Image 1 (cartoon, rainbow, N blue to C red):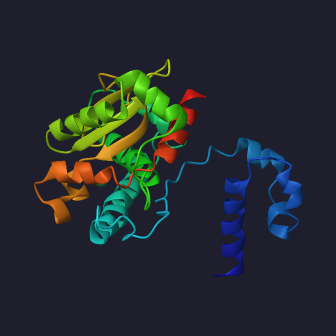
Image 2 (tube, rainbow, N blue to C red):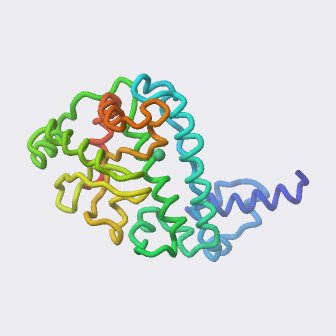
Length: 253
Ligand code: MN
């Protein structure tokens, strides 16, 4: 790269990275010196660039419940495509620099922002899904999460049955959800395609998802083919209820 190009590119990166004016002084180099604080204040808002989150476990870590090839394609191809297509759909869009959850609030039941709806939902839903799965997991929730489940559903077993039932009944592609409403009660929901319960103008029951289960065929077909129910039961061996409990705490804050 020529020196001039390098300086230009680093200047752009510097504007993008600075959020606190004081950091400017800390950048004790020639490149930073050409940007004044005024430049930063008048610079247009920096668009969000979404990135595929790294999996915190190996593709084969959820075997035998979810096979390695499914994980590799699901994360590396399907989720990656949602991220790329979301970034493309937001290029030059008025929502380019607002938070994804804020975008969900603004979506209306029309096809105007279909690409943002499908790919934004796809990115959010899968990011939550990967986080709540892991090896050496499963079992029962503990502590406050278990108390909330008992309060809302009677018992963990009842919750599990109702959740599997909701996931079984999703026609075609979609998600089953465990959500928390505005007053801290848990409820089960389901959505089609990549919609989620944060899309308040699109769903019957609005809430914050703390666990989502992907029932698209791409999530299970290689191993389970048409046996969705077997996949649903197997998933309970790899759910990290400690992470779901963290999501509940975040939602209640
Ligand atoms: Mn998926």
